[in-house]
Image (cartoon, rainbow over all chains, first blue to last red; front, side, top):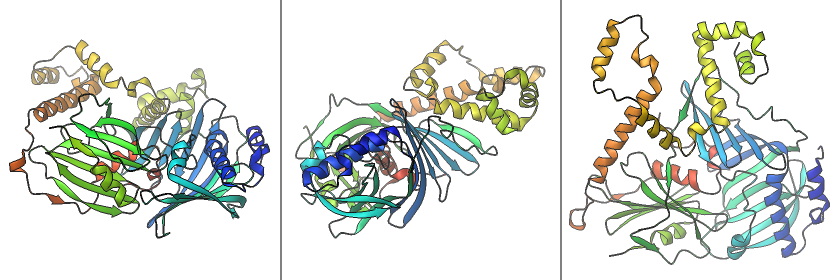
Length: 321
Length: 159
């Protein structure tokens, strides 16, 4: 593995010593959160959720100011996801077309940990585990366990030398793996050019921009006819917007809550004539879903959290009479 | 050929060395398409302002400055009679289709605003959810802080 200056700086600090106390564990997790953004690396990781398994090649580069990442999905449809600053560009082949989508930036593996872990500390405890080998590298295993039943637990394998998160597993309370994502192979990248930051072009296909797919409007919640109280412990509102969804003629309200790791979406829409009200709850893969109707509004809650959490979010809303 | 076109766009081939490329872009349909694809991809990846948050604003401003053709059929039939002119559609295809779809969205939006919401005593029968409706799942996945769903072929592609 070639050594890059930044990696040396990171590695030379407390990181090289294996975590022994719980405080050390939080420091190590903090390093992992930063390392995923600050290091230059290239590797192949495998994402697995339920019966879905995909290999992904990632190249990540940070020039001290901006981050560039290219994710190429190696199995099935050859989708590519480019991340630059706060923006994602996704190229997905669909039949004889390639659709280019622009999205707001999101945290993607291995950069899935928030750099501010205060919210996480409130709802989870972190324990130091064994030294294990992942992708040919020695790693420190950390156990992140929730203090209640409103979120799942995680295991993180962190490169003992460079602090990069090499593997992450999410488990339900029965200790069954819900989602697993981890490197098979990883190397630090010694590069200054961005030759790799471009898509593989299929000259036989038409490239089209998907414009309206992810249309959102900022919503400052002024004049809202509803209030939210008694959210599940540890969850806070992190975003609110109005968005168009297919099959709806009016934008619907979308509020996002997070406990630092897990996220829940709440959708509120007036029940228009001709729209069938939905009710019930469902767990599909890692995603819980809860629908019910209050005072002529359809409430839908979706999140990678236990069912109790989506139910509690759905009932946290009340409408002003 | 396509690699060369890409290189030309990326300034890796000097324009004065690329006369043959430019000729083929002008004459060859495939080369011409490749030329526009590379430009489109380049614009999208560079975060061209065309697709920025002001997109709609700019579009509406552009529409305002455009002459209103009250009788497009008349314009088209007039067009047919003058064969030497390129077709109307080829002249301003983008603004026409965008203007039309934008108008359609506005009409639908206006109709929706004028629709009444269901009142308590005439609620439709409640549907018990069997699956997670794709539109909400998609919206959730595209807005949460952390995303792992780009790796799997998500439910969203109905095409």
